[in-house]
Image 1 (cartoon, protein in one colour):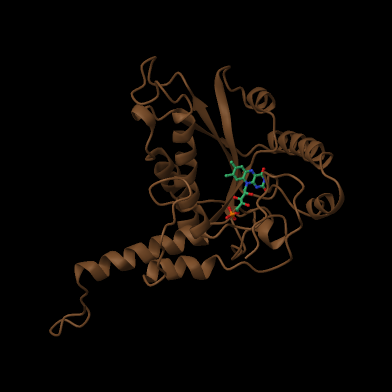
Image 2: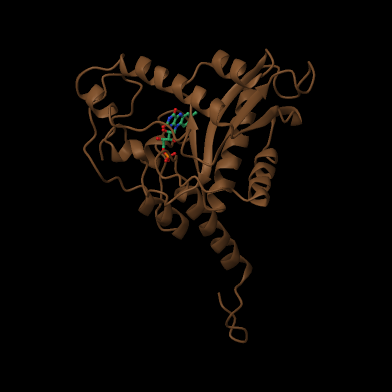
Amino acid sequence: MPSQHHPARTSAPDRATSAALAFQDLVHRRRDVRGEFTGAPIAADVLTRVLTAAHAAPSVGLTQPWDFIRVTDDRTRHAFHAHVQDERAVFASTLTGPRAECFAPIRIEGVLSSSLCLVVTYDADRGGPAVLGRHAIADAGLYSVCLAVENLWLAATAEGLGVGWVSFYREEFVRELLGIPTGVRPVAWLCVGPVTHLEAHPDLERAGWARRRPLADALHEEWWGGHYETTSRHPVTQLAASRVRPEGRQLVPATSPAIPTHQE
Ligand SMILES: Cc1cc2nc3c(=O)[nH]c(=O)nc-3n(C[C@H](O)[C@H](O)[C@H](O)COP(=O)(O)O)c2cc1C
């Protein structure tokens, strides 16, 4: 509550709420970018802040099993781009009917139009043989790398940059292209750079390919399927809800059960 004597001041709970709101705004502003890159350069200090945020991610056993390869070379980018086009064709050949028609115009990368690319890798050997917290779940190392990617993505968004994750590639191809040692996995090829704007809704939603599930569908109370009572009274929840209202084209029915088909 604002104080009577100091109208400009806010109490601790109010400050916490505005920080939470700012964070929620950032989270919901983040988009996967393909077509909106300007190609303008990224200032060195901005890139350092983004990478520093990525490097601050939590990691199993404090292994920090990630590395980041900056790729700007045109020949490398063209070689990767050609490979992505091949893999796009492989995926497209698995589709038929309305799904094939829906996929055809969807852009899946900004490899050549972004300012630069960052390839994030995973080294399972980092941290020695006895990684604290990984003995029962080998994937915990991979989870750690994905958290670094998310930190990077959010930090880039806060800096006004766009990020696009490209996974239409074979790991062996990228390993050879970038000289990545055997055993180190390329986890994410990220296209990064200034953008004209960030869309309000995911490209795949706007294209009618898939739609986000309402949060309520993902919540369970005490056991799988247990009813979880939600409230939209809190401003943070309201902000999130206002951002996930779907719009755009009708969803094309998926033939694969892996593709979300929820209709509100
Ligand atoms: C692991 C992973 C791989 C992805 N691979 C691709 C990709 O190859 N091409 C693409 O266009 N988008 C890719 N995306 C982006 C998703 O399509 C996108 O995150 C999703 O549609 C939601 O949109 P939003 O990120 O704008 O909220 C990938 C995202 C993740 C997390």
